[in-house]
Length: 621
Image (cartoon, rainbow, N blue to C red; front, side):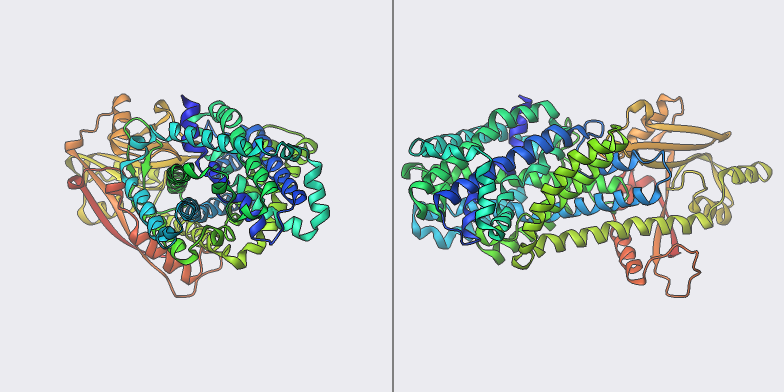
């Protein structure tokens, strides 16, 4: 059952590649569909599936799990943590930069995948009835609207049909492929790798740049790794080797057999492979499959966003949990509608899946290059592989990834700039937020004082005490929050019990409940509380208070006041000392805008709003 679920969620993207991949290998480069070229490209496709998915991801990269979780940010956290015991700050910084850029590129992929998948499915209508052609774009827009509108209900309600539906899809792919191969068994020669080599030797430069379209058959490879935490390695591997890989291979070979008999079928070999009576059912089934492919990628972008928030690379934004049982099922409204606008723009601008295919793949190839580099670091530092072993295996993967990336570079001028620009913008926002928070933290720390000194002052000069409890939230685990100092300075009073709460994110997916909090009673009725969460978790105040009760420290919610600092960021235009942490003025202004529009802690941490006091603080950065 887990493998069936993995089939529905993990393999939607890679499972819809037959709609356009083989067609683009010929159409985009003007290659003639001669028997030698057909068998050569099929050999390339088959061995790309074997080398990239079976060997690189299934055998090696999926071993680099962060307590069961996968994905580029999870791999980045694992690579950085494996360097913690060594004085290699610059190396950790490089790993972080690579991981962030790889994650940013996946946002570009998240925009382009729904557009190309849905358009390629809708284009099958022209083979049912040519009069349908003017309705392709309106129908694609309608389907995309439906995909993004249903996100708020969560994948749980519709996920139960994903696995069985994709099983039907892969069965149909295999059946069409077998039907095509029966007429020309000669196509099985493509299993021999020397045909791929001969294709390169025969076509030279053209043979190399065709790799940019051959790569389309593995564009869902990152999803295998990213969704590992939802299903586990074994179910994903079983679904791949026993269902997805055989079905994809049979379908590609069936399309190739069709081209051997009828080179004119290159206009759309997928749909022309189907009998006429099956065209409309295949269009409907393909549309459902592309919706699932889009869903899987959208959910992946939601997960990346939550990880980025928890790791401190993104402002707090609204996250809605759509399932009470599955923590991974979330809905991020702001990201959902930003993706929607981008996908609709792509459909209306590029108009056909062939135009989009010319732009597709470069972001994914770049992400795969980064994944290989980060996995090499994990192999060396965490798995303790020798330099020879790690360099030999991951070096071979890197050469392969760079070949695909190099072949895809020419796509930049044909629309490949779209995912790269999206990735660059997301990367800029992530790094601006990270750097801005560091600068802000230092500025606030300058205004603060060590908690030990503060407590000594309280013992020497006890202030008036008001009944009840106040919990002050701060990002500084050792200093005194500025709102607490302001309250004591201006109001000359403290609550009977005071707790200073800091929520910290560890570089692991989840933190066990018995490790959730650390409590220190600094002086009587003055507590320092550290709450720990993983980057796949969303902090909630009720969880923290419940953990405190289990440590025999009971904070009555009805008698507790939550005091939060509300920073107003002011970009300082004056001269600054060289030793001061700083950013360019334009990035300071960008950070100020991001900070102003971040979700308030009250909503993000689920704090009762009628028990919150916000203390405004102006900070020049």
